[in-house]
Image (cartoon, rainbow, N blue to C red; front, side, top):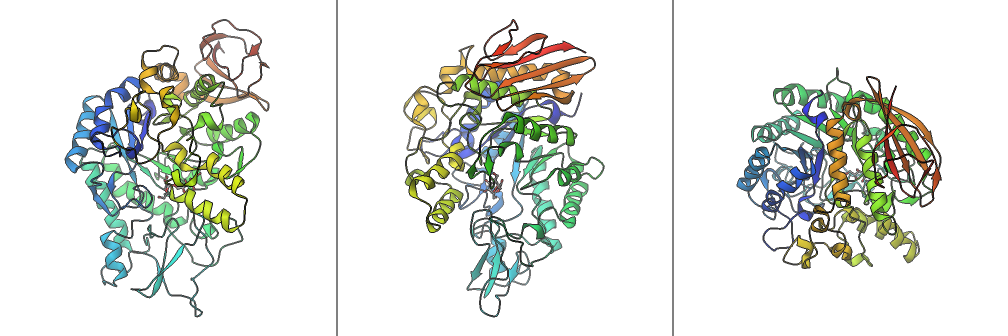
Amino acid sequence: MGKWWQEEAVYQIYPRSFQDSNGDGVGDIPGIISRLDEIRALGAGIIWLSPVYASPDADNGYDISDYRAINPKFGTMRDMENLISEAGKRGIKIIMDLVINHTSDEHEWFKKSRAGDPDYKDYYIWKAPKPDGSPPNNWTGFFMGDVWEFDKERGEYYLHLFDKKQPDLNYRNPKVLEEVKEILRFWLEKGIRGFRCDVINLLYKTSFKDGKPAIITRGIEHYKSQRRNHEILRELRRDVLDKYDCFTVGETAMVGLDEAKLLCDKERGELDMLFYFDHLEVDRRIARYVPKRFSAEKLLEVLGKWQQGLEWNAVYLENHDQPRIVSHYGDDKKYWKESAKMLATLLFTLRGTPFIYQGQEIGMTNFDFTSMEQLNDVESRNIYALAKKMRIPAAFRWELIRTASRDNARTPVQWSAQTGAGFTSGTPWLGINSNYARINYDAQKDDPDSVLSYYKKMLALRASSATLKYGAFKPLYADRDVMAFARELDGESLITLLNFSKKRKTALFPGEIIISNTGRTEQNAWLEPYEARVIKKNL
Ligand code: ISL
């Protein structure tokens, strides 16, 4: 038996798109409470709640204006306490998003800092302009634009790696870290059992020299996983987290394996696990924006590297920043159901804590928007504007957005075939995919052959199998379309065999089929399009 956060699966909720309870078109905390039974029925024991803190929503809550208050769109502090206790009654623990690289520019700290208040003036990263008035250095940001914003009131530039409404905190100022510790204590005392730590490897900026030439995030070598960043994580652990039964999962931007090994090293005590991105970018260049051909061989190579390189992984295929996996590595048309189940087979047979993103369990697909006006995401809008400036043709620009936009994952959860998809009785804040009449929770909940039922079966299988939870990972075979790997423990081997293509493929690993997405129980020598099998063998 491992720790509780190794035994359980996590369900990520992006609150504004999960369940609306009051008809204002925005999901809310009472809505989440009304769906706890569905999450329990799925088999997840932990919820990761994307930000619900007070926020002007320039980046949908990842710009926090008060860490101790709830965004009124989502409810009240009482609703939040109620959620923690209602979840607890069902055996579900809650972790929150911890966004401490930056705050909102509407946070009190920033307002005071900008005004030059002596207690707050060094809470953020302020620099004088160069003699010609230009920004302090040549860095570029994560949202495809400038990282320096000139503030007239203060007469200086402030740093923002993300949107200009997300100024970066200054971790050279020891007071900032003390504030963060207090915020952690505040939520842990309320019964929160851990944190997903937003861009947690970017906290400390060691130098402000110009960056090396790069297309995006020029300058990152001066602030990614710096020595002091590691120390900060250890300090948070020692002074706060160690006093509670909780865990952390870091979201680590552009992280490499060597860096990750340090961040997750048990003895060092920095993070319990982390999210990397390599496995979602095997068919992409420049983060996720330029396509290249998919290869199962490449995917297995990447997965194998991380599965074997780290003692424990955070395993995921979707989140609120990524396109839907069935539209990405699967087929959201003819083989929608088969490929959604095949990808579930992959997710739950890897070694680590599995993370399911809302809607993934019913095979939700990318959005079906047809124009930029339908999008909300700040990153997508910036990329579109940049591409326009670069004179990239309109059709190509749209293609970029369509395949990679973060809004693909942010359309409301499709609960039923009713108007508003059972998400809202009002006008949804972001368009609902018109396939909701076909793809929805109600249509799947009692159908033993549905994607949802398959997720439940896979979760139950993982829960009952020490080999799937703790067995060693061993790559077995891969080509462009097919992959096979084994999980091995105490003389048992469970082999996952997956077809990522629309073609029939020859492949055979002898043994007993314990689950398959075709319902097949007898072995044969080929795989149907997107077929998945888990095969048991004694070693
Ligand atoms: O999206 C990414 C990977 O494909 C990365 O660029 C990176 O994960 C991301 O930009 C950082 O994301 C996190 O912090 C952002 C916020 O907008 C995202 O929603 C959040 O997940 C700033 O807080």
